[in-house]
Length: 441
Image 1 (cartoon, rainbow, N blue to C red):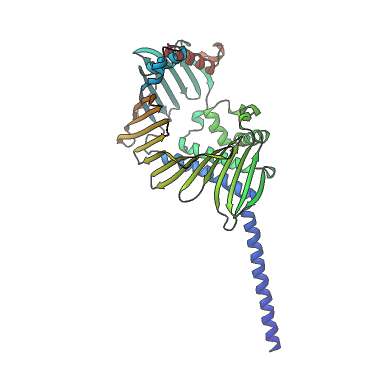
Image 2 (image 1 turned 60 degrees about the horizontal axis):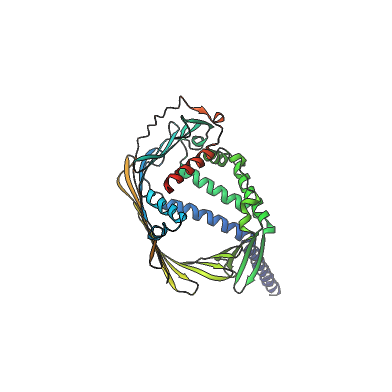
């Protein structure tokens, strides 16, 4: 009997020890998984996944994602009673009035053709003002060489050297897959470069607050570390270089982030269950707070005072957003509806002195999978202040997409960019200046 009692006592000690060990391990694990480093990393990765999901939600499977020819016509119809009435009082108002009037007399044709198999890409932008040529710009990638043409500034195509766009878009990858890969790598690099010295943690009521603080110097270092990781990853570097041949020289400087000041990101988690409750980002006097939950909430503050609040309700593919001001007065609504062939956005904001209505509708029709489809997009604007129309009208884009990928541009008379004396960006800016002068006169 004595031996049996001793045995039972030993078992109890062992059981208590095991339970204590389990609780200790659980405590260590819970402590790690709610640590500043873990929460910050989880938040960054979650953001990256949300970006991918958002991009995927707007993708439409037509069978023409990689080899296509899109021919679009853009028509603008904008008016302004306000600038029209004031045009006789000031040259500045006259310039704006002329600009709106001339824009409404333009018609633009944009053609984009991509032939993945033969490694060719052509973008042709051609716009006319009252039937007269205003601008014609072409951008061509032929195999591994890029060319550009700007009417009035270049007589022939300009050979701008090597281009690696199709090197990153081979037979085993798609544009969508490349975009997802870059987002994932940026997210991974951002997670890797959140240093311990950026982090701090405090408690507020039932929340644990993880804070990431980035000074301007920290921001420069953080962003450059991300860029460097993309450069070191062969696939990411290939993709980025395909879109920007000078990616190897990309670098963030302090002047690029000077307007941000010190950026603070706060992540609030429930200290009992470890679930993220809200995010907050502060820069200078401005702050944006995003509340997690079944119904999302975004609050925008300036100097700690509430300016705008967005209450977001999601029901399937429909999103409704109620907009209120700092006094909790309803000032507007925004709704987003989408289907496999239609994307519709309607927004309105109304105050005592100002009202704005915005509409965006994009739809696909006549879809013949892998062969062709039509699409149309209409953007409508109506902005009024003190019973005067500041701006109203529409921008309409109609397009036809086919599987005709033939590109027959003649580059036999092209000249090397080194002989031109100006960079492509300088010539584009010069052309834009010329266009603005014509539109404003």
